[in-house]
Image (cartoon, rainbow, N blue to C red):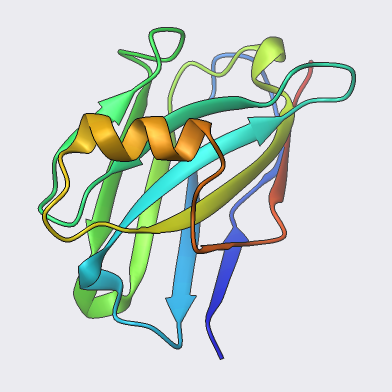
Length: 130
């Protein structure tokens, strides 16, 4: 059974860093792009980052310079490092898998925005507060 499980969220103070994990099972991660999006109460869903099957990365303008996405196919895991956390980063963070072989990162980013992905997880909650 295909599954994505996010972890690593928690309560952190502004300025701190956090690394979220997205563990995949039941499908060959190396053939998929993985995107991260977040949902905060009362706010629009926001796509924040994506890493394609070939390692190409994509970031929303709002998080460039603070977020870093990476993948370890041997561990079937994708990571999202968030630096210099701000209160406005408070949200539930989700990862999603998109069939990605042969598609460019920008195309996959648009697919993520259209919610045209194959699998997604239950999310992990990040709360930034002093």
